[in-house]
Length: 268
Image: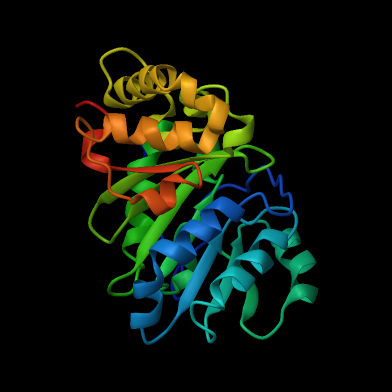
């Protein structure tokens, strides 16, 4: 097992590797809207509403968008973009404004204690074996009641998945897709979070979930005449007896489905 890098004296050494840097406007809109709608209590209850955007890439655009989507939830929210690449931090500095800053940092979160961490398309480039260690490093930095939203999506943000973690453990997995360009639910397989993307094989829970979703999707094919939203909602109703669905129909209509993590986590 590889050892975690030691921390430098004083300020924590930035831990991690530079992301590939692909950044498109609105790429993370689905994740942002989910954070704003599903985590407002955590954001409003804390004394220091710091949200960290980890690994924002070559452009700070998605960090700026995150701030704009969280301000209606809490007007005094502070968003900090962290990048391990010093050149990207320097390039983002001109975008700083009230409530928006950029610093160099990695999984150690530059020593800050946020209430929410958004880590999008960061762990995708790491080996699966390193995921628990990087999760743990971020979890140790959370303020009381803090959470991490860690996931991945395609380049245009049409398909994505993310895990919600608190300071102790993973809580849920969310599947999200733009329904009008979806062929089958299993199309999300190539955008599974790193902890699951190599587990989409027979005998693993995530493989079973995607297969069950495909079967329910096919079962409700006649509803396609009324639009993909109705078909997706019917699919979710069909699987809710056998899978622990955590979200409500109000989220399903957006092409989302949230499942308890224990039901889909990798087999031992």
